[in-house]
Image (cartoon, rainbow, N blue to C red; front, top):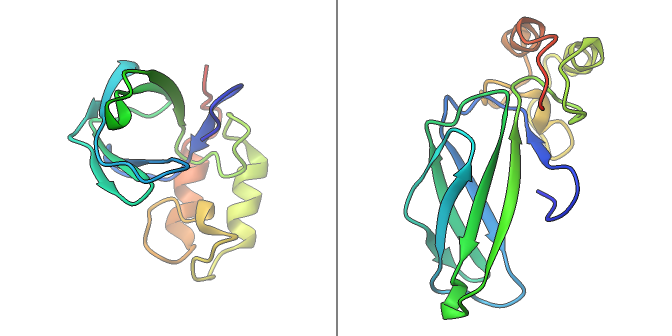
Amino acid sequence: MPLTGTSGVEDRDGSGSYLAVFTFDDPVTSGDAAIVSGTATAGVPTFSGNEMRVPLAEVADQQNVTIEVSNVDGDGGSDDVVFGFLKGDVNGDRTVKNTDVTQVKAANGQLVTGSNFRDDINLSGKVDKADSQAVTANKGHRLP
């Protein structure tokens, strides 16, 4: 997700559970994370190399969630990162519409790759009819 400007969008259906991964320039071994706005619960961070991983639970759809990352390796500072959650917004423009449906239908039958992973709404590993149905069911939904 971008650190400034408009948030990125997670369009896949994690059934309320997601993993926020923060990547730093140097290895990290400690830090804190807290939800400062939006409906979600942050779990206990884990660390691996340059990454801080924060499990998220009870994440509601159609919202922005702001996570405050603080005290990384005891530096005392903090930064807020905004994540958008909008099931079916495969092109990331913050609104589910016909272009999203068309994109998923065009990928129907494909196994998930680095270029089409956003089209796999239900995280089955393949873009299929269920993904198209999920996008269609969410048409008209948007992020604030």
